Amino acid sequence: AQSVTQLGSHVSVSEGALVLLRCNYSSSVPPYLFWYVQYPNQGLQLLLKYTTGATLVKGINGFEAEFKKSETSFHLTKPSAHMSDAAEYFCAVRGNYGQNFVFGPGTRLSVLP
Amino acid sequence: EPEVTQTPSHQVTQMGQEVILRCVPISNHLYFYWYRQILGQKVEFLVSFYNNEISEKSEIFDDQFSVERPDGSNFTLKIRSTKLEDSAMYFCATGQGANEQFFGPGTRLTVL
Image (cartoon, rainbow over all chains, first blue to last red; front, side, top):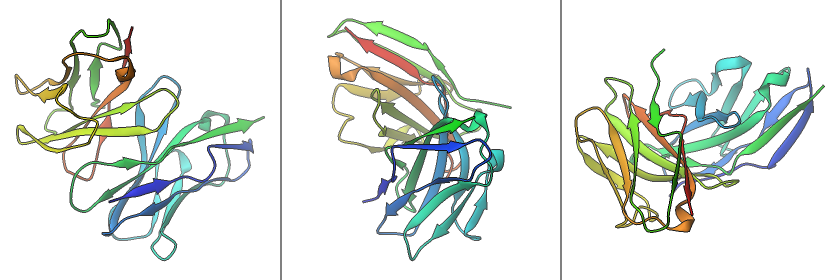
């Protein structure tokens, strides 16, 4: 069974600072990994995903994430935070059999002026 | 850009009543999912649907829940007899393949 942990339920950064949101997973099979963003009162929007191939994945809005098998991690980064990045971020994992995604508890990102 | 839509955006119901939540998937998508998110908690998988049948379901998806795609377009989630603890945001997601899921904006269900 898969599971996802996200260290830090709330992360605050200053505008222009590096954003680092942590995600660790457990999976008995090679995982597919995803980051979603949820703005207030909205649904989940896919930021990026890793399925196979290059371990550094680039997504929308300047975000990227690196799959590190040895660390079972898929941390999300952005070099320079914008005010518009303030939202809830969810990491999700899916095994390569079965179809449902398992979501982490989420990290709320606040961006301070 | 095509998107998943859900209706209603907010549903208020009395405990014990039946509710039907509707989702219109992106056309040519073949995989359909329902998730729920209780206020302040994480997103939880309910059920996946492919080729006109349930392919996976979680422990949450008990006999009170059912899904169908009655007309080949809408994908519905029915809760037969709602309980207070069913109050949550319900998200539909669809995908062309099994490795992608595009989420709708959600339906907020409030059970009184």
